[in-house]
Image 1 (tube, rainbow, N blue to C red):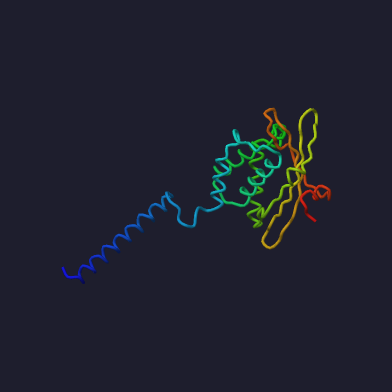
Image 2: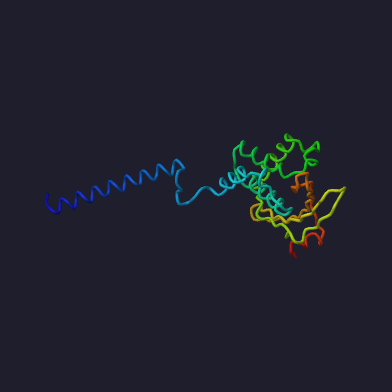
Length: 204
């Protein structure tokens, strides 16, 4: 075999090896065994992270972190497409942040909350609306009080809703209460336009 023939054979073998490696890599990527370079869809990744979050053993320690997680759940639910099973799982996780008294209210049964959240999500999609950003006041500025012998805290948030080219800013005040295990649960919330409330966020 002359030198020219050897070079041709080596080149062909090299191309075959490269092609084989490409096919193997494609298979592994399609099976989800390795990253594609672009990474997983960020929304799917967030859904998975929130579904896998162990709130029984790793519950947020302070009121502001509870409220941040509340908005993280809501932003994920409202902004992303997901299966019914994933939607149910996220709602189950979200309800773990709620005080027993809030969940005991007639309008907050599982069925009612599921139906209302589903309708709201569908309306968001119809209006092309998303939760763009949210802000939660600093933990150092949170107001604490003892009500009926139980520790309570109020946390103010600001949320920016985006629908196509329009933006809407809303502010809400959350009431949280410590349960028997020492975990802060959301007792309720209401919209606020009070400048004193809004000022804790540093908004003008």
